[in-house]
Amino acid sequence: MISNSSRAGFDFPVFEHGTVWLVGAGPGDPGLVTLLAQHALMNADIIVYDALVDERILGLAAATAELEYAGKRGGRPSPKQPDISLRLIEHARAGRRVLRLKGGDPFVFGRGGEEALALVAAGIRFRVVPGVTAGVGGLAYAGIPVTHRDTNQAVTFVTGHDMAGDLPGALDWNALARASPVIVFYMALGHLEEIVERLLAGGRRADEPVAIVSKATTPEQRVMVTSLGSVVDFCKSIEIPPPALVVVGQNVALRDRLDWLPHHPE
Image (tube, rainbow, N blue to C red; front, side, top):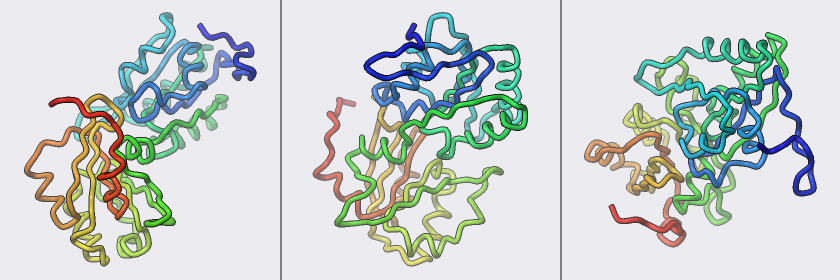
């Protein structure tokens, strides 16, 4: 077990009993887990983890830690968010060191803010440990820089669905299409046809490059490149295992030269 004492010239914060740490596990590759996240894994009494947390990362936990699954997947029976927050509160009130482990970053489309607010309302002390979000780390593993001086001075991260599972209606799609050179969509495959229609209606070019990154940073990662005008038919023609990112923009074209990740035979 990693102790709470000083290591490598700096002090890890004490993971106190009766507290909750909201920790980002990164997009999949265990090598992208932060030192602070590993420290939490080695000291937690109970780990409440999401569906997108790679099993190899759970293997970093202390042998004495209890694992509790709380995954939410679209279209499948899943725990309700209030129930998950209540479980965190109950475990903390029982004096346990509670690790809420989320794929990516807990504050980037991870509902970490909702859980933190529930902890505040219950008087539970908490800590946030940021993680590598898929929209940055996943694209890097696909050889697609999320920013590049020759192509974009801005990037927009967009969720593919709202709380009800519908396409986000509060977005100004015309403004999004005009203003953001690169758009990274999380969880967008279910509404991809409508998203493409809105982007094209807002002025995006049909020949603009699009990449779909499935299971980013894992051994099963697949990267598929097409165009905005063709992506819907392309996705209908093949099976794309979730989770998947969809990125729209000229940065996708850089993958031809920056695809650094070794490829394994199918």
